[in-house]
Length: 612
Image (cartoon, rainbow, N blue to C red):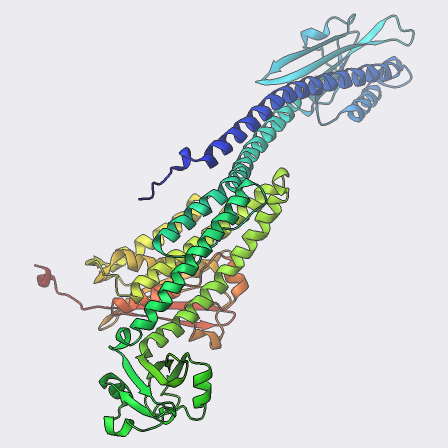
C-alpha cells in the first residue's frame, strides 16, 4: 500500500522553508538598517535646508524693516510679499516681529488680525540668539526656527523671524517607505515560496516520476516512461529504469500475443461471429450475427462477406486480407436501418504453413457507444478549447517567472495574480463539468421541500443588494427592482439547486448590465406555473444565438465572457436543473436594449384548509 507523505514532511517543504527563512532574515536585517539611515538622513537634510533658508530670509528682511521712506502699511505689505515668496508646502507659518514687539507680517491667514498688534509668542521676546528646535504641536511634530534680523550694520537686532515648518511630513515619508519595504518583503516572501517550491520540485520530480512508474509497472501498465531531465545521477537512473520497463513490456507483449491467439474465438462468442473461406464466401455464422444483420442462415451461407455486410463499394477481399483490422458500418447512412452501427473486426485464418485459408470477422453493436463517443469527442473538443486559453496564459506567465521575472517586485505579483485567476477559472469549470456529469448520469437526486418561493427569491436578491451596499468601491453599481405578486407562492423544489439557477441568471444580468443599470425582477403566477424573470439593460443577444444560449460552452461574445470569468456552463446547468424540476428556462432579447431570462416551475394553488 502506497504511504502518503504529508507536504510538511516532504523534501520540497524542507528545501523551501530553508530558502525562505534565509531570504526573510536577510531582508529584515537590511531593511532595519536602511530605514534607520533613511530617517536620520531625511530629517537632517530637512533641518539643514530649512535652517539655511530661514537665515537667508532673515537677511533679506533687513532692508524692508529699515525702510523709512514708505508708510508702515506699505512696509508691512512688502514684508508679507517677501514671506509669501519664501513659503513652501512644508511651511506652517512665517512671522516677522520688529524690535518694538509688534507683528509686522504673518503668512497664517487665520492670524492676519495680529498684524500691527503686540506679539503674543513668548519665544520671540529674545532677539539676541538664533534658536532651532523640534516641538509637538497638536500631536504633530513641528520644526521651529527663530532667527534675529539684524540692521544693515550687522550689530543691532531690529526684529526677529519666526518660522514653523511641518517636519511631520518627513517622518510620514519615512514611514511610507518603511511600509513599502514591508509590503515588498511580504511580496518577496510570497514569490520566494513559489520559487523555492519550484526549485525543490525540480530536484524531487524525477524521483516522484520513477516512484509512480514503478507503481504502474506493478499494476501491469508499461506505457509510461520516466522523463530524463539531465545527465546527472538522477538522469542515469531514469534511463536505466526506462530500459528495464521496455524489457518487461516486450516480455509481457509476447505472452499476451500468444494468449490472444489461443483465445480469439472463445472470447468473442457473445458477439456475432462470421467465418469465410479463402474466396470470401460465408461458411459459418452464429445466431448473434444473424440477429444483428437480420438474415437467416440460408440467406447468409455461401454469400460473399462483402455483400452480406454491404461493403462492396468500399472494400475488396484483397484489401481485407492485406489490411485486416476493424471497420465501422453505419446502416443509417446506407438507409437500411436508423441509428444502427456495427463494428466489424477482421482476422485472417492461417495454417501452420502460412497459407491464408479465410477470414474471421466479429460483429459488435456499437450504436450506443458511437453515439456516446461522438458526444464525448464534441465534449472533449469543447473542454480542450476552453482549457487551452487559461493553460496557455498560465504557461506564459510561469515561464516568465522561471526566466527571472520573479526577481522583479513590480512585475511578479501581477504575473502570480493572473496565474491564480486562471487557475480559479479552471476549477470553476471543472466543478461545473462534474455537476453536469452527475446530472447526465442521473446520479443527482432532488432534495425537494415546500418553500415560500417569494421569500426564496427575496433571499437571493438580498444577497446581491448587500454586495453593492457593503463594498466601499464595488466593481459595478446596479439597482435591483422587484415586481412581485403579493400572494405567497408555495412550490416544491430543491432549494440549493434553485438558488444555483437564480444565482446564475442574476450574475449574468449583472455582468452584462452597464454600470449603474437597473435589473428588473418579476415574480408572477399563472394557472399551473410560477414564473420568475430577470431583465437587464445590457447589449442584448443576437437572434441567431438565442437558440444556442443554453448549450454547453456556447458564448455569444467569447472574448468578453472569458474576461468576465465565466465558464460557459452556468446556463447549461440551469437548464438541467429546471428540467429535473419539471420546469423550463428560456430567454428573450433585443439587441441594444437588454435581455430577459425566465424560469417556470409547476405550481398548484392551495387552499388554507389543505395545509390543515
